[in-house]
Length: 534
Ligand code: DQQ
Image 1 (tube, protein in one colour):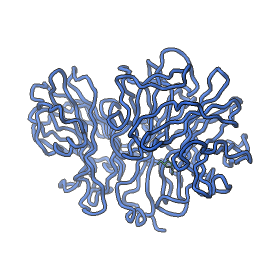
Image 2: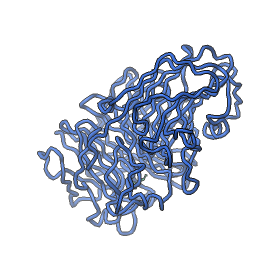
Image 3: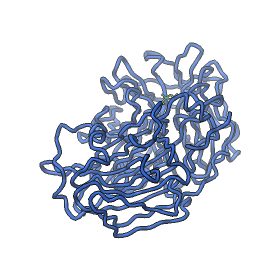
Image 4: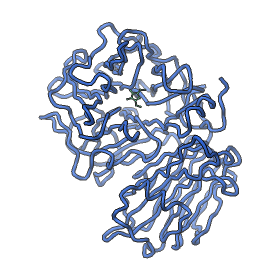
């Protein structure tokens, strides 16, 4: 196959060709980061799924190894689907994954490194006592994606498997003394009616203060739990913040968190099947997510590749305790090259300025803080506007407002035939302000067929007392990954410009509100290309 280069990314995780989907079993082991992912070694569409494997010392530069797990046994002959790593006492990693058998049943299998003294853990073996868990008493075609296991001081490991019964989404809980013989608990750890299949569950503790992460088996005071599921019905990753009641082995979301598709999302755009791990090297919790394509199957076959991974993000609990914060890992900054800086630049109503001239606007990292003199001109908020995406679709970047819309025009052609705006708009509700953040693909490409161009959006629960809003966007040819207000609301768009490619891509800042907006400070960097699985 010839791999089309135009929309390939410069610094996001990608193999040289073919299809990729979910991140699997990320771990930090003896100084090395391992990353596995769902991969089709034969083409740019989903199928023939193996666990591809790459290693890194910084999660930015990657070396590809041979696939770690591929169909070879009766218990995984039709596919090696998603799963997780647990590091067992004695520093021994073990993979739990879903194997598909010849009858298309979903089983939970395990694999271990063949040689623990190989620093890259190149080879993995699947012992003969597989599978560990048969789909007994569950829906065998909806029973997959085991989590990292955690240990409780009753001497039992726990792990979760995603499932559904009719339209109720379920995370089954399994217990084991020896990690080999697993018993299903009487009650799932959590479930919710009318949410459909729960794919790729994730469950971990977060500290009530600071940005450090906690080991999945950590116990102690001053923490909460995050429970995440990937909803097959909407293809987004939803999470709640809550408590884990150990005596009953139940998770209960806080009353500030809602289950299901009205709930919080890690990302309001192309971001699915995500998974976290505890990075013991830097004491942080890292989130990996798959940034799926917005083009068609035919386009993917034509490009010779499909799917990228979002930049790994540090994740911790917001001081409010109501949501998490996410921020690109600090190592990404080592790729920053040429810089363009702006400070105290006033954007009048309707003004549009090019920023970051001289940098590679198709492959860039941009950080900007906007300020506004007052919120008096904020438009009234209609309480019926509960759907952010719909609101952004109606009030796009060119629709005049009061305070906002203001933000960036990324991957823009010189004359703005194409651009992906990432912006804020502030509304006034009776006792508060409502901040909408959009990453709108509507005008991202002149190509009219086969592209999904949604007006991705989320609300930002931010205090505007200082009359400032910050935005960071990672722009990478066909990805625009944005972090609003320090990582409170994140949106990833996959876009396919036809004109705004390579050196013809530009970056602008704009203000289409009647209120003046100031760029307090803007920094844009050209991003260098890391070693990426070549
Ligand atoms: N992808 C895997 C499944 C998982 C789904 C198969 C989520 O294990 O449920 O490639 O994208």
